[in-house]
Amino acid sequence: MTDALLVETRKADPATWWRQAAVYQIYPRSFADANGDGLGDIPGIVSRVDYLDDLGIDAVWLSPFYPSALADGGYDVADYRDVDPRLGTLEDFDAMVAALHARGIRVVVDIVPNHTSDLHEWFQEALAAGRGSAARDRYIFREGSGENGELPPTDWVSVFGGPAWERVEDGQWYFHNFATEQPDLNWDNPEVREDFLTTLRFWSDRGVDGFRIDVAHMLTKDLTEPLPSRAELELIPQDGKHPLIDRDDVHEIYAEWRRVFDEYDPPRTAVAEAWVSTPERRAKYASAEGLGQAFNFDLLVADFDAGQFRSIIAENLAQSQMSGSSTTWVLSNHDVTRHATRYGLPALNGRPVKQGTEWVAAGGPEDRLDRERGRRRACAATLLLLGLPGSTYLYQGEELGLHEVAEIAPQERQDPAFFRGGEFDGLGRDGCRVPLPWTATGSSFGFGSGDAHLPQPAWFAEYAVDDEAADPASTLSLYREALRLRHRLQTDERLEWIPTGRDDVLRFERPNGWQIVANFGTEPFEIGADAEGIVLSSGTVDGRSVPGETTVWIAPAGLVG
Ligand code: GLC
Image 1 (spheres, rainbow, N blue to C red):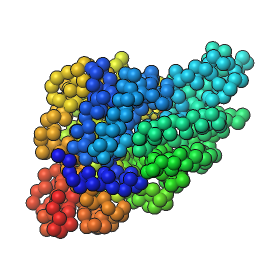
Image 2 (cartoon, rainbow, N blue to C red):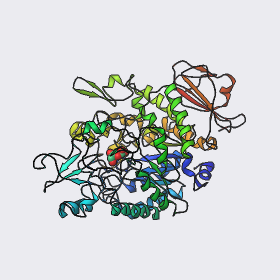
Image 3 (cartoon, rainbow, N blue to C red):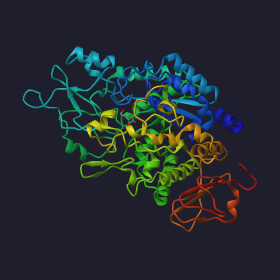
Image 4 (cartoon, rainbow, N blue to C red):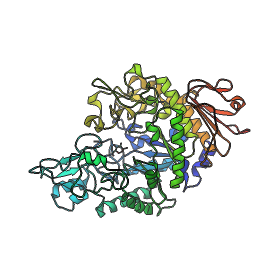
């Protein structure tokens, strides 16, 4: 049965719910497959609403579910205002929103404004219409260099690796920051701007509560000739005037979007995916006149280290004061190696490391990965984050302690970053996108009645939802308990550090008396009589001490969970 406090909190404060929300990211094609075609779908999500409710999250964020050729896992959108027929229909979407809203769970959808799919009708029109046409002006077309324009306009490289320009039949070239199938839009074109306002209203009218904005820092560009070379581009500071990244003028777009969000009651929310150079620059995306919130990705690249966590926490809390927004915490998402795996690899922190000609990344050779240690540390880190002020974004599967899947054969991989040799972790991003195990046995571990679109390894059985749900000592039970209790301590967005006398132990108190103690070291940390107030722990508390690699929550005197 749903916790009464949880229901109450979810209903409370419709305008500010996002400030301290626990938002669960669903990667729809890998969540639950209702029709057995191997791809997760919207009815699959509806079938798991009880699970989401029991988990205790406040909102879900859905990665793209729009019509797409899946050249980049759905981030190549062919139609912004529809559902991929393989994933369902708009009616299914409405039913999903209704089912989630009935439990008080809010819905955030992904908007991908930097580029469309090459199958989008605009791009098809641009190809057919030819040079100089209005249809081409919605994208970034240029003549090539070289005697006959046979060379790309510049030597720029795409984020996924390989050239950032592609030649079309009549000889012109178009620009793509990501895969070839993802042509960048021209945000100087008023029609492009207008169309996204229509899209935001389309989903807002269907009851969507908020938006996650894909590569929010890349939309506007200054492509005045002569264009710089790749080497020159890399030397240009990212201070608002860089030709491609984090330009000041991008905020004009978000100011316009804010006016659309504010047409609704309650106003719609947004969170920016903005990989920018400084906290000050990130704060611009999080401003109340703009998107309102921005992801803080600092922990994605940090080690399991108390000093690093402490300075990241302090800096981001200070930054949120600057923007007036609340801060965000993220340990895993669909673009990075799962944090249980990062923390289980010796000193590599899950980053790609090349051994000879082989990438040893996520999951690497089995002998390098300590699965149990990775899971233990991951739980300690998550429990610490859930105790912090601000909102936490959780990625599907992390509540099971799930590890990255390294063992996917090249011919079964889908990520364009893997094939183009881009800057993402050496094995690409498929390993964190493998469909979830719902049952320990059965076809695709309960994901669907057929095979899953990415192969699930045999060890997925150890992380199945049905087993974990029945085990009070499982990672899932810990998440459920933490998310339930979290509503009691998330009142005021402040904390006070308490000295611990140890470099590897963090301790802080929230204004309402709750304390969090995170032991990043391996030696137990003595907390004396306070141990009696421990209501939640990511490990087994031994008498009056917090074991190594463990976080505990201590309730104020007299309050029991
Ligand atoms: C964002 C998404 C990533 C996608 C890219 C291009 O970084 O999170 O998955 O590949 O944008 O849309």
